[in-house]
Image (cartoon, rainbow, N blue to C red):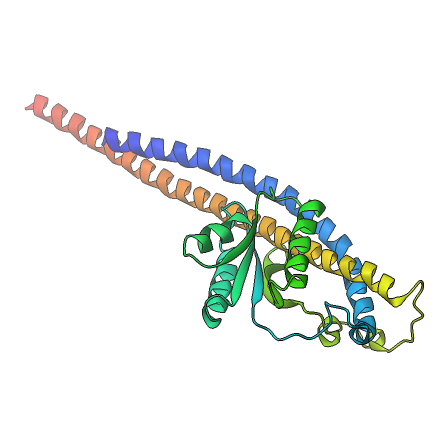
Length: 292
């Protein structure tokens, strides 16, 4: 029984140390979540209004024959998946990987390629020999404009160069601190119905724009700005959801440590009480034996 008490005390001490770690990680994730959420909320209005503006101008761009608006036959497609670089974030990556796997199986081999933003997705698919066109990792849980621009530039260059005919995004959209939603949406090519899908009714009114200095120069600035902002806001959604998922996972781990500590403490008290009772029985038995 003394050995059992010793083992129980060691386990309680070990779980206490684990609890301190998970609690610290929860607080760090909460701080990162606040920063990421603030950046996301500031970026959303700009991205939304830029998308609506481009949606209004889409018919003009189609007439002008802009390459991002011109219809083309689809032979190859790209799927950009946003996962985490590190673990300990619960089921954050599971739904993304499962849905990406489903998309890969639906397409003929060689007709759909992956662009992996985040190490988890790349590690999973590269080991299974799925086609990975590019990898962007080491985000360090921070929203970086240069890295999001690098992803956007690669996708645009690949589309314009004929390496892909369609681009889709797969990521976790941030809903609230306790909720995020796997989102699958088309990124390229552009069409008015998709751009104006979530626009309010008053924003759908057709307007007659005057282009200065000219349509080509306006679209040469506006379209890249939209494409870069779309990747940036998508990365912001994914990182905010990741910090939320990790904070909740560490909170659950901390609660589990507390529950396990309570259970082991109860077991230790019972074992100690049993040991004391056994010692008392031995003492009383010895005293009775001496009386005889």
